[in-house]
Image 1 (cartoon, rainbow, N blue to C red):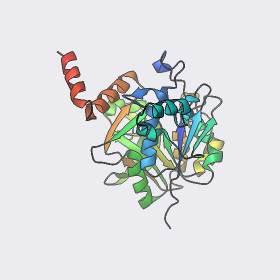
Image 2 (cartoon, rainbow, N blue to C red):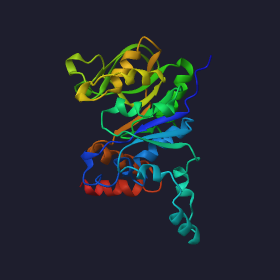
Image 3 (cartoon, rainbow, N blue to C red):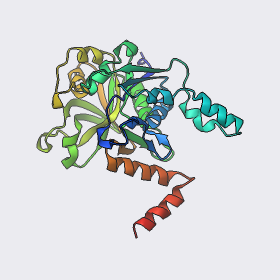
Length: 292
């Protein structure tokens, strides 16, 4: 039998964004723009490309702007229409009624807890997870990270995570897989370790912010205690499912930008701007001038 399709995606967006203060005092960090598009929009666009229909935002207090971004802005659209402005620039922000859902993570207890907060909406379906801080950009002419994962899921089913290879000295900042047999971009996952010391890391393949998980993970999270950092870690829950269900990693054939850091955010902005046909040449000239 073919595995159940991936129709739902969970976006854990309840974080406070303290590394970007004071910008995030009022504006959710997921609405900070890389050029002219908020981070959350890039993630939702990637989900839609992969055929995902329902977006589930796990939010916190003061973050209603994320949901409002995908609502109709009546005054704005009415004014633009009256002035003869093209509204197509807003097409990516439109959603089918009922396909954008928000739930609250009332206490910041970690990524695993945030995912568990969406359990009633996920139900008994497999689902995707997007960490919007991780901006994944396809190669020119290629497909997005989640689409690559959905295609792999159609072949092997079970659970999948996206991974990237990093220099070994960086692994202690990430979740790392213990790899098994590999077949092209697909690697069997034998184990997962959250932020291991470099000397104890089983590989340099880090978990990179995209997941496809079976609904049983919610039952694991239900009774899971706190792990690294005193938080309920999603990595710990996934590790318990290895050996119970198929578990694979997909090495993403594209670029990843860590927009949870200021330097990574600037890097993403420059990379996206340079790749844009409407501004790339100008931005390149500006960058070269600044580097003189």
